Image (cartoon, rainbow, N blue to C red; front, side, top):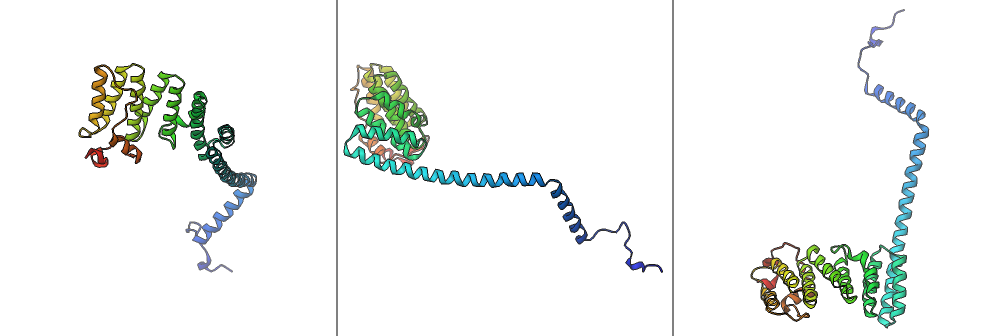
Length: 263
């Protein structure tokens, strides 16, 4: 008895979607059996990575909290006036929690304390990692304080270089001016009139042509050319006010639109 023709499917007839799905499932199952060991190892690695990430995150959070608590204790000690204890606790905080925000703040506090007790080299050492990048958080403060430490240690050339680096590398206008101002002050005190003039001229190149403080720096340059300028001459009041208010003016910004003193 012959089969009904309708039940025959030609060999070259296209496979249905169900047939293709079943075929792909069978292929996948066969591949999984052949690579079972690889799949197990890969799964174990993924699980280990996830667990490691969670452990590290919890550790980092706990470390930041511990550093913040230690910093609060350090502030209390500094406020009490116990400088030797503050130095000891500050160094311990930096050593234990190095790299945290609290440790960076502690470095600044230590730098100031070391200068108070006339240990400028220790101030340079503790501020160095923080002051390398002027534009990092607290980097400007650390770089300026480190330059002051060089100055206190009698290392005039290093102090000038450090102040000039701030003027050349800082992001904001008020920071650049502060760096060049201090460089000019140290240069004038050291008898380097040409160097001080060059630093003041760098400031003039930064500020607006109509800025009222230009006359201050032009007067300092004229005094240096005619015989000298008081080494501790203060900047103009308008500029000092800008700096106190933050002076967050990016380098290269048109100060006529952002600096009220230039209007």
